[in-house]
Structures are given as structure tokens and as C-alpha cells.
Amino acid sequence: MIDGQLVDASDGGTSISRNPATKGILAEFAEATAADVDSAVAAARRAFEAGVWRAMSNDERGRVLWRVAELLERHQDELATMETLDQGQPLAMSREVNVPMAAQVFRYYAGWATKIEGKVSAVSAPNALHYTRREPVGVCALITPWNMPLAIAAWKIAPALAAGNTVVVKPAEQTPFTTVRLVQLCLEAGVPPGVVNVLTGGPDVGQALVAHTDVDKVSFTGSTEVGQQIGAVSAQTNLKKVSLELGGKAPSIITPEADIDAAVVGNLQGALFNTGQACGAYTRFFVHRTKADEFVSKISDAARSITIGPGMLEGNDLGPLISGEHLQRVTGYIDSGVEAGAELVLDGRLPKGDHLDEGWYLGPTVFTGVSDDMAIAQEEIFGPVLSIMTYDDIDEAVVRANDSRFGLAAVVWTRDLVVAHTLTERLRAGTVFVNQLPLIDPAGCWGGIGMSGWGREMGSFAIDEFTETKGVWIRTG
Ligand code: ADP
Image (cartoon, rainbow, N blue to C red):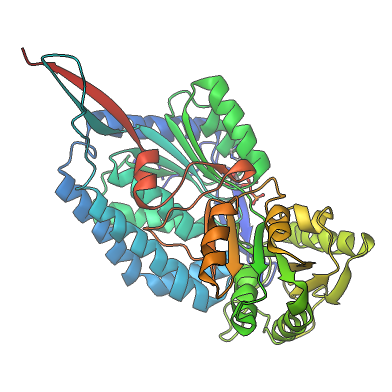
């Protein structure tokens, strides 16, 4: 989608996307070329310079974003079906969580369009007025992953547009369809042609966008390795602004005074949401030794009762993994845990049940006896694999929880207010949850420290990411 037109790739090239529940080809899409990248960036640049969007009144820009939210809701069933077929997640999740979340994000940022303000600064220079203006950064490349395609596209497009930028979106090659549909709905809502462009295709397209000297900013969600490349290439080309939301390895500390039943329910959902394909997924469980047996037995029993199957069939809690390659990768981590000496309490490899031989399925997998240096305790697995460890005192738990190159999310289970507040301060993560699932909300900041990335999404934080601050001096005497 370049300059408001759905077009073929300049060389006619296409790629395919598969349905992970059947492994069958779902549809073809255009594989953008370097020339298409140039055309899309040029369209975004023209739209930016012409001011068709940033010079529109703030009220009208807000109304257009609000209309996008309404259109997303009107097309909820269609988008949810598309997402489930392409990505695999249960229909209940795409319909009740992800599509509504995308609409909610647009509605939230519709409100921001009229609230992006500068301030008068307390300068000491005589006879001078100094104030700041918040201005759009310019042309933004938004590169998204396959785990929550529509929602993550919305997290980036909505604040970028609220701030007056123009964008080129590059969805993951595994899951391009809902993003293209979202951009069609943006146009239908009144976003002028050229303001939102989409390039479908693989890593080469992302790379060309990141290296493009007429792109002013990249906002990326994906793997840490690619995030590092993006940081390096952006610095070497034109020092474009970069925000990165990368991997995670969230620790979950279950204290002796926790409500164990609530911790079991919350941790299981936190670990298995989207079949564990979530950067905020709870993966490293530090359980106080006195509660370990109870926790392990209850969470394994609960995990055994999870229903696995095609997302399109109602009642399945867990859909397939995204691809055969990813299934192999996650299974490789399970094998490595076994080889390293961890005890497999529940083995999700080769799950049995209706339709499970047709797609890329893996059942919940629970390890105990995990030590901190094992790959399953250190690396992001991005699958339904739980590593349970025990601890004796809370200081030890905090040190071990912080012993990770990642720092996206962490969670504490306790009924002691002092422990809750002490740990929220001591845990090294962009977000700390207490007695909760890994929630994401348009008003709550989201992003990580360390190898989990740069910057924050959501709330006013995304507005900061998508604006530049300009200082203005006026001589008054
Ligand atoms: P995952 O490992 O979860 O597939 P990636 O980080 O490889 O995540 O991909 C996330 C997104 O980044 C996708 O849209 C992908 O096409 C894109 N991408 C992959 N490699 C690069 C790269 N070197 N530069 C820019 N974008 C890339």
C-alpha cells in the first residue's frame, strides 16, 4: 500500500503466508523490493512535507483516529478471523483481546492529538521568552513481529499519527494480513493517502527501511539480535531515532505469603498466553522452598488440563506455534533442558489430540530442578515452557531474578504490602506486576531495559518517542 494504492511489488514478486494450524498456504502477498521501499518512503516524505496530516487541525486528526477505532470494532469478526488463520491464536483471543485492544489504542491516541503541548521555560537570560514546541519526527518506519500483529501495529501507528508523523509499516512476513487491512481502514477513516504506507515482505525490506537516509525514525518490536543490528545501522546511516522493544525472560517470584491458588492461575496464563509467544511471558519461576511442592503440583495439574487445538475451533486455550522452524527451536530448548539435567514434570512435545498432527503444536511443558545457568533459564524460548526454581530467602530471589541480560517484565506474588513495594523497586525490569497477568494497556508504559530495548511504548511515553522538542527564543526587550 503505497500512497493510498494497493500495488504489486515492482518486480511482481510474491511470498506466501501459511496457516500454522494446517501448515497449508493461506494466501500470497507482494514481496516488496528495494524500489518499493524507495517509493513508500518517498510517498511518506511527500505527505509529510505537504502537511496534509500534520497541518490538519488537531481536533480533526483526533476525529480521524477515533474513526479508525470505530472501523476496527465494526470489522472485529473479520479481523479476528484473519488474525487467527494467519497467526494461529485462539479466536476468543483475537476477537476479545487483540482486535479490541487495537481499537482501544486508536481511541486513546485520538485523545492525545489535542494534548501534545510544549511549555514555557524558566530561562535566566534577560528580556527573553523561551518555550518548547513538540513536533512530529517526520517519516517513521514501523517494523513489527508476528506474535500479535494487529495490536502491535496499532501501538505504533496510532501514537505516530497522533503526533503528526507519516509512516511506512513493515509487518512480519509470517503475518502481514491484518496490518494491510488496518491500513485500508485508516484510509477509509480519512487518513490522507501517503500518510500510512505498508510494505509486505521479509527481513530485506526491514533492512532497507532501516538503512534509508530519508527515514527519520524506526520503531521496532522483535528479536534482540535484529534490534542490535537496527541500532547499529541507524547510527551508521543518518542517526535516525530508534525505539526497540525486544526480547524478555520475565521472572516470577512466588513468596511464602502468596495466595498459591491465585499464583497458579495467574502464572499459567502469564506463561501460556499466545502459546508463550509473548515477550512479557512469565518464564522463570522462583518459588519459596516451603511452597515449591504445592506450586509445582498445582501448576502441572492445571497445565495438563489446558486444551490445545486450532484457534478457529471454539474452546481451545492454546493454538499452534507460528511455524515449523519455530517449533523446532522451542523443542530444541526442551531437549537442552533435559540434557542439562532439569527434570521434566510435564512434557509438551508431540501432544496428542484431534487435529494436532495437522499443525505446529506444542503442549505446556514444565521443568523443575532448573539452575540459573541453563539455557532454559537464560534465553528467550518464546514457547509454552515453564522453568521452576526454588529459593530460600527473598534477597537471594531478587539477585537471581535480576541475573538476566533482559529486563522487560517481572512479577511478584505476595500478600505482604512491604514485600510488594520493596520488590517493585528492586527488580530490574521496565514493568513490574504484582499479583497480576502481564497486562498491557494504552495508558501504561511498556518497554524494557538492558537487552530488552530502548524507549517505552504506550501512554505519553509513545508520544515522546514520536515527537521532537524544539526550543523557541523570543526577544522581548
Ligand atoms: P522473530 O525472531 O520473532 O521472527 P525478528 O526480529 O526476526 O523476530 O523479526 C521481527 C521483524 O523484523 C519482522 O518484521 C522481520 O521481517 C523484521 N526484520 C528481520 N530482520 C531485520 C533486519 N535485519 N532489519 C530490519 N528488520 C528486520
